[in-house]
Image 1 (tube, rainbow, N blue to C red):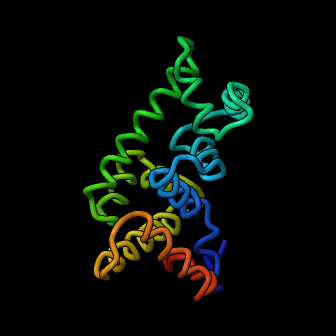
Image 2 (image 1 turned 135 degrees about the vertical axis):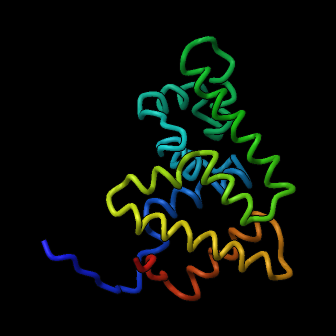
Length: 172
């Protein structure tokens, strides 16, 4: 049981916590993206089960998952309440994204969802929180540029991925 450390220089963008938060940012920017939406719904942030997701999809198999969620919200059962609660939270985050700086929005999401604290409880929690801190620092750096807005930040991160490859995870 000797602690060890390896600096592999890769893995940051593929970590669960970064993929989850980036998916959340993507659906705040545009909720009609099925893959990021389902990723967030399956995460600790929303906590939907696979059975619940199937029931939602069955509401409308021919349109986006978001549209199926809007239909599922209209019922009176437990799933409808859960869907309605999530869509209300999503709408609140979307409104905040219009006037908060990207780093402020990111910190708000970390605290409002409890995801920052949840990451600390996951295996390798200090590392995971460090990764979230790095993403927050990237958002601060982004805010110092002439670009603004969530859409541009998501593009900024995509360019970082493609130009630099995958950055290393946080060093703890």
